[in-house]
Amino acid sequence: MIQFNNVSKQFPDGTYAVKSFDAVIKKGEFFVIIGPSGSGKTTTLKMINRLIELSDGTISINDQKISEYDIHELRWNIGYVLQQIALFPNMNIEENIAVVPELKKWSRDKIKQRVDELLEMVGLEPETYRERKPHELSGGQQQRIGVIRALAADPEMILMDEPFSALDPITKEKLQDDMLDLQRRIKKTIVFVTHDIQEALKLGDRICIMNNGEIVQIGTPDDILHRPANDFVKEFVGAQEGIMNEKMNLEDIIQQTECVQVNSSETVPVSTSLHDILHKLKQHDQIFAERDGEIIGVITRQGFIQYLANRVQKRGRENE
Image 1 (cartoon, rainbow, N blue to C red):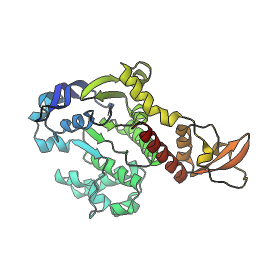
Image 2 (cartoon, rainbow, N blue to C red):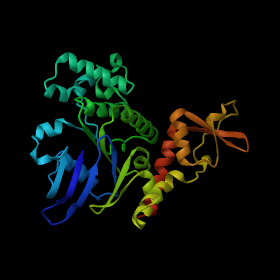
Image 3 (tube, rainbow, N blue to C red):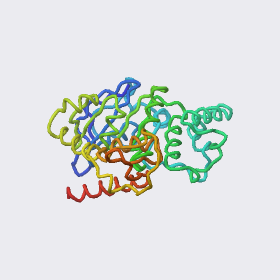
Image 4 (cartoon, helix red, strand yellow):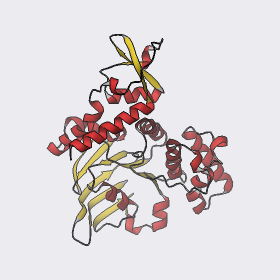
């Protein structure tokens, strides 16, 4: 589907953003590119639709070099989703979704049918959301619109550049689940850039780890976790997993509450990891913390998100 042959991007000062990139992305594959800041992952993504021109090598889509495509035809056949959702604020949701189909001169009836189909696909009732403006939607809803706008003209592939990184952890995990469900139905070729190893492991059929513009390892999530290519991969995966798998002191974030009768599925012990807390808060607005069988307080989504933000900030200061 997409083939990179010895692809490099060199800047005028002689530095390389990407160097000797060789990979084949299969049709219908969810291919994740991950690496630290400055590793070349976004540059690699943008070379596919020629937002950045490569310096050496070739990229081919369906055995045709991208340089041989008409630039407009190339981009119309590739959906693109950014971290900055970039919905047109003066357009309603239907108009935002219809941008590329209109450029391709689809009929009004066909566009309306496609808009309704896509809204239903991501759980947004067309009659309710079609006429709304972007500012009337939550961040998660706006990002859903960003995804389906990229799908509007039924492109062969979708490029996604850290699309969920600006969202809070709970909304982010919910959208990841939605993305997996969507991909099971539509089977598009997706190239997805992230800096979050948990996201990469959850979404990717295969993961490409980059560092200093070069590929360090390409493999399945199981390969990356259990057969890391070198110490860099081990440390990169381990450092990012550490925060989410560490045990937390729930007493730092619980709000005191009177003892109440609660369903057992809504309680967690004080030794629970951040990852498990996040999973619970996807399903419930609040959960109860218990010690020795007694409820000692409640954890709300807002309190958890603030705790996690503070923990990541603290970890960053420790590593400076």
